[in-house]
Amino acid sequence: MPRFAANVSTLYPEHPLLDRIGAAARDGFAAVEVQSPYAASAADMRRALAEARTQLILMNAPQGDMDAGERGIAALPGRETDFEASIAEALDYARAAEAPRVHVMAGKPVAGTDPAEAERVFVRNLHHACAAFAPHGIRVMIEPINTRDMPGYFLTTPEQAEAIIAGVGAANLALQFDVYHAQIMVGDVSKRIERLFPRIGHVQIAGVPDRHEPDTGEVNYPAVFRLLDRLGYGGWVGCEYRPARGAAPGGTSAGLGWLRRC
Image 1 (cartoon, rainbow, N blue to C red):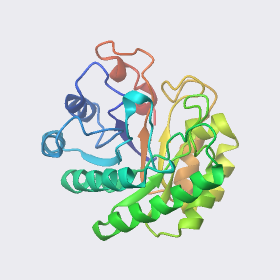
Image 2: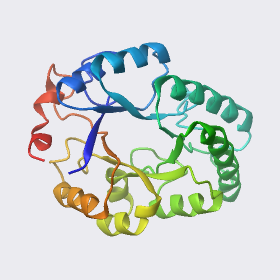
Image 3: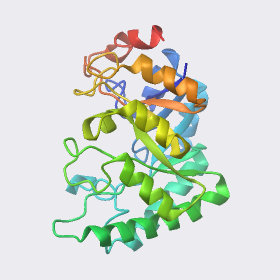
Image 4: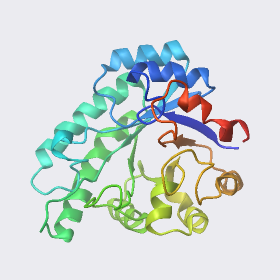
């Protein structure tokens, strides 16, 4: 059975960010991932991880001006200088918090942007990120995201990500395969995992279509977990779902029956 990591940006929403790490540990999670850790200092993050005896296995690079709707800037022409600054910030944080993977988000190019130009910038920026992280043993992740949840996002399918990874050609660039996004965009998840397995560096899960616990919805996750075992997947599976009970106290813990049955 795969190892599961709690995404503390979506789970345990009744707690402040750093307190979510301890809550995850009390429920048996030995690892966590976080979408945007920067509201907490890296020193405080590392202290919370040590106190909970957990590890941070994935974090995102800064996403740009999130209040203005930005969700990454790696594929935004004209933002190359901002991107390089974001990678420097992410590298400092990842090293201090000992995170071995950093998700670099492509972003949402402005209307009218030539897709070929956005791809050229994305590839250029990924070259830069991979070169910056490689000496420190950190892998760069890219994740296709569905257009229902994030309209206008540049990277939307596993096949598009596969082509970009091949074009960059960096040994520390890998696919972050989120089953939720893949099922919504293209389906045929098991065959895609099998075919793309050499490219996959991290897996995430959530129920489809509502992004709640993985024992809800249309995906047969026990079969997915058996497939990952058969393929020899040795990484973590990130639980990046929204608890059906929302921010009710203890809501995330109450919804972990699926994990106890694994």
